[in-house]
Length: 85
Image (cartoon, rainbow, N blue to C red; front, side, top):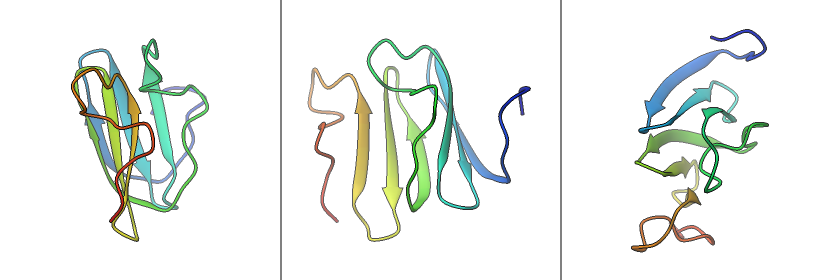
């Protein structure tokens, strides 16, 4: 991982201008452009089990089956309140 990004990573995802890495502890590290909130520089804490990156949005599946969404939502691809599982 880049300098300053710590973690025991188990999965990665890449969008057009941002990248995500899922840590074994369920948190997500984010790198790259964050102009729509798709890649918060401090990452995202949570109990995530899978991640996906779109053009300018990111999705993370929680252990309970719900989905956290971040980034551009101009076509409903990343509802700010997420999706219940």
